[in-house]
Image (cartoon, rainbow, N blue to C red; front, side, top):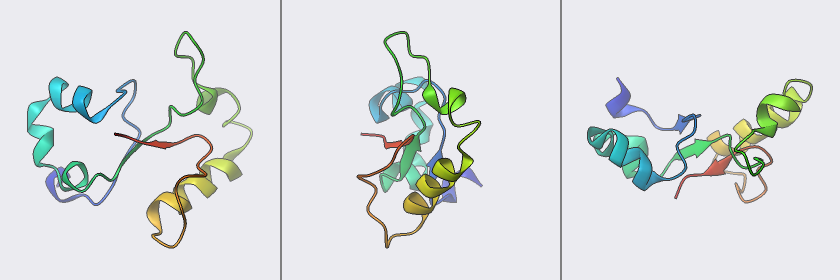
Length: 88
């Protein structure tokens, strides 16, 4: 089923597409990877890789939902995401 997914969201501590493909090379076959539709919730992290997603996101689910709407609907630009970032 993963081979046919349109989007991949939340990859843990993976920081880039290159790192993802190095960890598990066969992920390169997944549609979401080939189409560049991979987003991780690591846009707001501190020096020690602590994630604001898990800290303030618990009380701001509206912002998380707004990010997900922007990601999953092509009508919205993803350059204004708050918690998520597109994996490059």
